[in-house]
Image 1: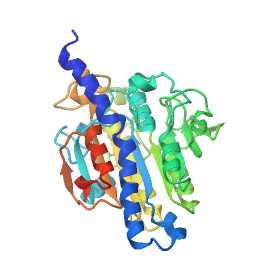
Image 2: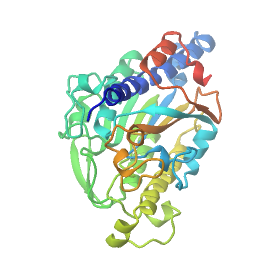
Image 3: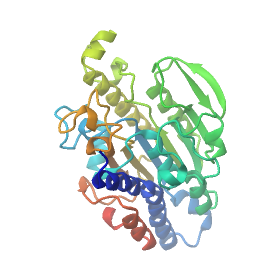
Image 4: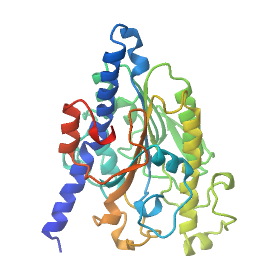
Length: 357
């Protein structure tokens, strides 16, 4: 039975996502531009070097119960990279998303609710007429930023669509996932090529290469498909889950350690990317979040299988988020405020983001 509470939850989850990331990035740009005008107004040629780089990392199907530093869940994967970001930034307790990935991604990309983008469920295509976050960012900074999306798209099926929507460089998968993490088709700027490199490693390799080639500020949307199904054992050197069997029966009987191995591999490879960034995070903002809750097969208490990914219960829509790096003065702190569009917009119009400073 649909209740008013459920209807209100559906509406609220959209509000909390639709412009949160979209405006959050611009907030940090405003902060940076204020510093620029104060310390460097006499030299406009240096403006590019002052604008921060932005790394937006999306983990696929990662709930709070599978993320360190949250109370939910009895067991946790080892994520030293994320823990370091938490220690040097802000951990959010009340980020709410859609219950599946495509609407969340569409909302981040456009700054709009799902019923405005037409993407309310998976396999619904986004309109190419929408203004993307990448185009908006470039227009607000007079084309200063290079932009890339590396990893999972899952907003349409045409391989040229990411580039059509203003993303300078796209390399990854167009659909919702892969049948094998080590045998899949990579699309790079409209060209398809088969590869056998582990997806998390491949995306990280391309991220490092792309970042290393930049000569001006950049915005990288890094959308790992991990730890999305199929559950599998990640390469041994990337995780600490031990010597697990690779047999299908073993994975199906106890998928949680395999799910954790993919999460730990993501964390390991993210650490490699952060280490490759020139000057570290001195001028780079990192935003890390999950796109929706944990899958029902591996969800942990207090959630249940039917109140996880794909549901509008808390286990499906309340996800982790961490912000760290340039411009974040609060270190090792938590933020329990709801992420509402009015809150973000109010701080943006005042030219600062008080919660982080």
